Amino acid sequence: MESIKVLIDEETLQSKVAELAEQIMKDYAGKEVTLICILKGSMFFTVDLARRLKNVVNIDCIMASSYGENTISSGEVEIKLDLKNSIEGQDVIVVEDIIDTGNTLAYLLEHLQKKNPKTLKLCALLSKPERREVEIDVNYIGFEIPNKFVVGYGLDFNEEYRNLPYIGYLE
Image (tube, rainbow, N blue to C red; front, side, top):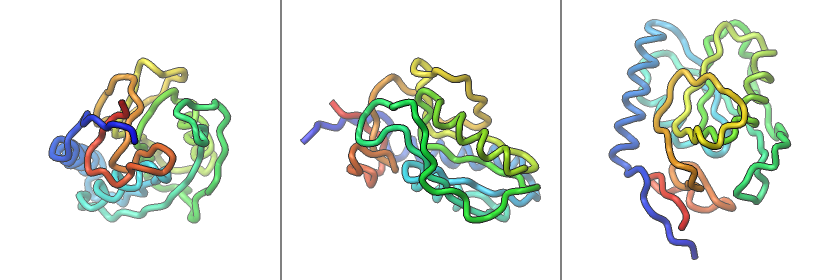
């Protein structure tokens, strides 16, 4: 079994989620917001964020993958599950667990933009800027992290470690 080192502890993580929720509430005061959870990695983040928002919140999910069973992106994006509801004319925030190369997210944002939301913003918990291949405009960002393969708080390695309450990295 791999050894996991803590990168961001649970308290720091939850504090940042609360801070992001405050920013979103300030920007969307009195407005209804649709959160798009990118499955499966951003499940925990989306739920924690939504619980802290005082706005009327709709949640929908989308699933895309470029990893398969690898720790490095293949570069080919596949949408495995699309939105159930229309986002046309809505204020939409895509909730992402981690921005790595940016390829999958760029593909998803383009896909969602075609659905004619009123606004489309991005909230990412983690970002690995040194891995970026595509420039991504992030409206709300939690943490910039080093180029390590991270797990926990929804992020996995072969479907394991999602349930860790912190962000760790495999050693």
